[in-house]
Length: 219
Image (cartoon, rainbow, N blue to C red; front, top):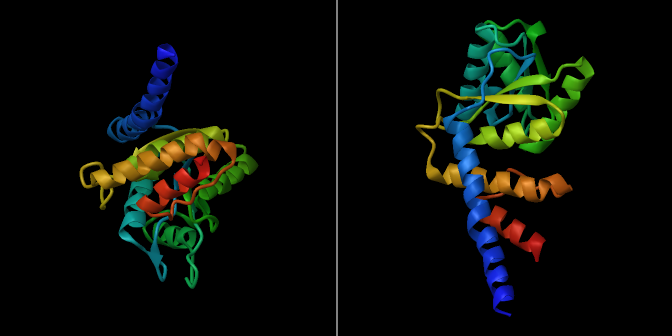
């Protein structure tokens, strides 16, 4: 009986302490020590908010990073991805392509995919496009704490993904708050435990909404 109780306590500790700690560590480590390569077939810019075609500060930082990588010759193409919010006149992908082409990137070198308002649906969209082009190696230009989840999803779908964290804007490693780290670690944990089993949790849930959603699913 004592052994059984000890095993139950150990299992509870694993669920409550060790697994969330692991998620926090890998999310932080990918931001701090990005697995970045200097040669790939495409650079991807995940969508973020835009206003009437003008990138918001998060999307702008991702676009600046993608342009920097493209200017250094790390990949020949850029894919921007992301749909619009209800009522928007344009999409995150279109806003991203417009900004890049206005800042020196040839239109023929930018592919806009106006699909998806969360990381998983956007990842599925650009992986599908990559497959049609028969390319597999991708550098994801995104926020530091978003890297782990974005790379994991892409790799799960058959890509060979690395990440180049933004060097400007509100979501650099230096500027990000711990709340963002905790949220991304929670979203990463939700993906590897539920998302891989076909249960899709939207990025647009609040922190409390994410916790409540996961709790309800496992009851």
